[in-house]
Length: 296
Ligand code: KIV
Image (cartoon, rainbow, N blue to C red):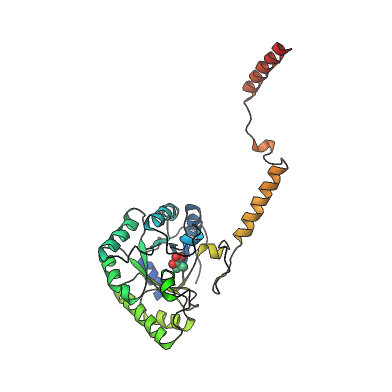
């Protein structure tokens, strides 16, 4: 498989092109983004799916978990990301509470993400029990991504962040979840925190592309939280995280260098300062000279 060179013209990624990639066994790439700058760089680097994840509760807002982030906060970040994304498929998480009250309110929230935020896909956490709701949202012409396994919005119900599908019962439940969401018509299915062997079975079984995070290499694609990828997360990384850069170290180094330069009056230099036009400088000098003469 050849990678499109960075900066080369690219085709817009759609839910249909993801399915084609699965059929061609071409790995699908997905990263989270929460702001314009990162979204733009990620999109220009050729990533297929940009996800405004509810992980922004932690990465951008400093919360303990994803539970407190609201629809309005998600929309605020989605709008910024929308302005940075051209070719990637833009997906957004429906946050905790946005699809739990009743189907009408859930569809209304999904519509806000499309209408106000420009999302192309909304992601809904949960397995077979969410299948009917997912159908309702798809009926409203909104593509939906599923998310099963270790679903962070269920942290209290699960009693912590635990790898799912380690027992035979657990595997059966995950297979039922995956098949139910596949039949409901999800555009892609995120598999989080499940054994590699189970993710491989699901990927074989379903027609929708699977995107893994902590689910091994046999998934149709992989997703990482952008802040984990570049080491900007302030917590010890999960087993599956690979740091592809060290932005925390870069920022610390830059900030310390700025602080030292200001302290030593090394910043700004003359070349980094604005200057008066020659005539104004001369006129000013004349005025000052007159004032000095009056004082003498
Ligand atoms: O919120 C998020 O970042 C996610 C990804 C980890 C899949 O749901």
